[in-house]
Amino acid sequence: MFLRLMFVLLIALNIAVGAWLLLGQPYSRTGMATDPGVPELRLLSELPEPAAPATVPDPAPTAPPASAPQPVVAAKIEGPAPAPSCVALGPFTTPEDVRRAREALSGQARRMRSRQEQVNQSHGWWVYLPAMATRAQALARARELAEHHIDDYFVVSSGEQPNTISLGLFKDQGNARKRRAEVIAAGFPAQVTERSETVAEYWLDLVLPGDAGTRWRSRVPRGIDSRRIPCF
Image 1: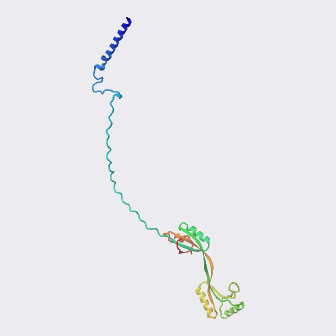
Image 2: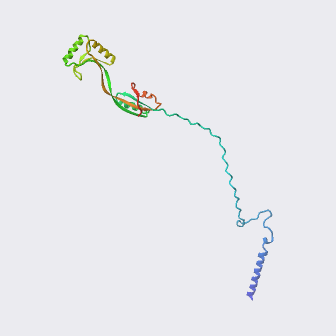
Image 3: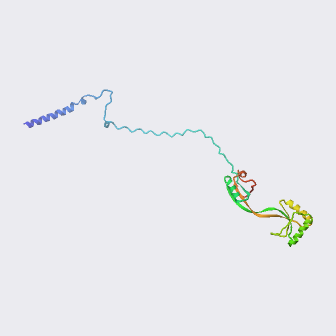
């Protein structure tokens, strides 16, 4: 009996709870839970999916603004560089003189070279009577010269031309010829010849820029000459 009563009470209780859930909730009997004009609060999960943004086509590329015309600068046209000049400086007396000149001109010349030449150097003009066969004949001829008032002579006793009678050594060729003419006029076969010997001369060859001119003259001793040579 007690169990039947408990069963009936449980059924009644379930019916009452169901009726309260169905009919007793405030939002089931009234309208909106918010005041008019106030937006309703919703969960993020209840919101609709946002619409994809409309694709806006890229604007057509616009041409860059035209820039002001740039002034045209005329290129400077230079003429060909002057051709180099090639000269030989000298003669120098010693290799040391050439070395000093080379050092002084090292900043002006493009190329340099030193060289040596063998040249005949004149020592004057010699007037003489040809050698006699013996010294006695040479002394006899010298006495004849004295009788004709011809002075300034001596008899060569040694060397390459012994028994020759020297009548003088002259630096000027004109004076030598004048002396020879006087002796010939007195009846003696005088002759004249140039006295020379082979000596070494030293030269410095330069290749100079075309605009160098003669600026080298201020850097070498006085008396040094120049002559044109083929470039090397």
